[in-house]
Amino acid sequence: MKRALIVMASLFLMITLQAQTAVSTEPAYVKNPDFPPIRLLKVDSSHYITKGDIKKNRRILLMFFSPECEHCKHQIRDILADFSKFKDIEIVMATFQPFDEMKSFYSYYRIGDHPNIKIGRDEKYFLPPYYKMQNLPYLALYNKHGQYVTHFEGNQKVETILNGFNAGDK
Image (tube, rainbow, N blue to C red; front, side):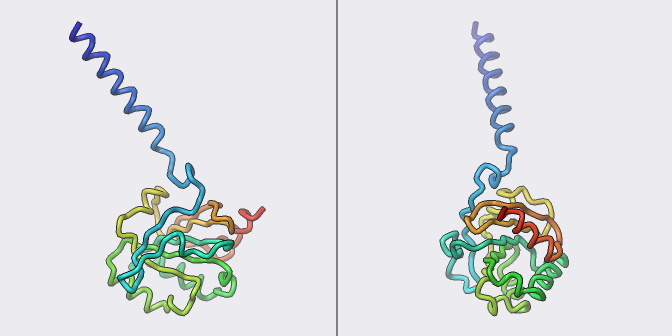
């Protein structure tokens, strides 16, 4: 009797764990298409960027990057070179890399010259597992209602990003 109870308990535990694993494979952004609850340390090192800091009724481009990544550098150069097309888009840049690297990137690319670009450090490493990122830069696009539209991994042409937004507006 005791052995049968142990076997049944073990079987129940295995089935429960299997069911939880199956449920948890879906990325969080699929389960919740709203813009995520971010908390990014700003370059001033004393304040945070949160979801509440993002202007309402504007498209959002969330870019996860590494300051040392050549593809990420190329992506920001492309965006800045064609910046007039992004003036009505809130751009949120996040990295997990060391704070001083983020700050150097911020200065080098003069991110502060563009009020619609916010940059911060994802200290808790929240975003990569949230999106199940595989490559950088990672670009997540949200429509003006803060709803997920699509995402891209790796460097993208400006037209590709803008077309992604346009598809989400339909």
